[in-house]
Length: 160
Length: 55
Image: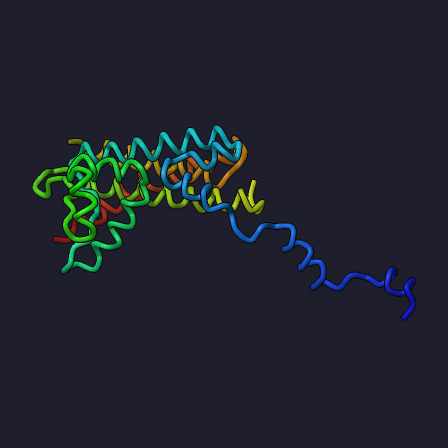
């Protein structure tokens, strides 16, 4: 095969796919994702999506505060309850809001020494709004985790 | 504590979030917001009524 032949040869579909995947970074920067999780809206703000950042921050903050005001409990792992890990995961999605609330309830020393089973999540199970409060807290955390995934997609160029 | 208000407040927050997450233009966001908000509020009210006959 001559050089002219190789130049005029059409690209195979697999080559086009390889070129496209090479253009898209495989991973979003970890500090960006961490910042996005830690402070809701920060990731979108850094990426220039200012309006979306403000909306996400306000929505997540409002949901979290509503949950706390309704005396919801920040999910913490409990030794005899496997599902409590899921609640803890959802609440931990709130980033600094969740950590600040845990410090408020346990103190910094109590937070560090209480991991994983000695943490107090606050709230009052006898309160009328307990279940609703939990729902707001879980929703806020899960929304922030979805926002982190959105930041990852935007950073990798897969989404506007 | 008003249960209906809490349901509407929750639906509002979630609808706004998903409208901005899944749509990038104003018209699309408005449409998705209205759709998800109304589905959640009307759907929850309808389910509530349907559950009346059950103990």
